[in-house]
Image (cartoon, helix red, strand yellow):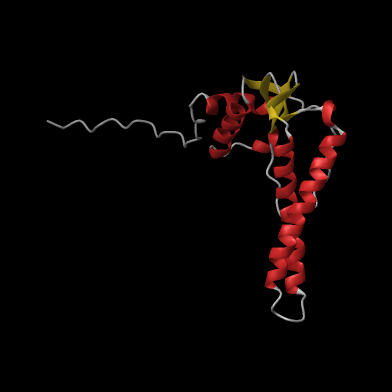
Length: 182
């Protein structure tokens, strides 16, 4: 998953191709793969060279309940109420008189009523096609982290807990201690 910015920058759109490189690690959950990338990011690894690839995609639909007239009416009333509040507030803001606050409440009630009626009518027409509610998601069997070939050893060392050896100056040759004279 990616976090989208509220103020997107113009970036070149990458064509949909599979990333090239070597498999760094394979994880059974996306959260584990994301945690590994997070670990590399905290170690100042160039994460632009990484990709998380989900393999063997499956569509999973989880049934959450039975659909009834009561549930449909409640859901329709809720969505209609939101639409009613929106129009009521617009009317309140652009009203020449400041005393139109009761119209916001009236718009809420009318929106809930219309939403309920439309929800019940829609359910009555489509009744025997789908009498349950559900959520659907696409998941992968496993997730692989792909990294550029040049960086795979560094990434493996960082993930295994070893920090990359920092280059140091060569040590000075040992100096013999002075021998006391007799």
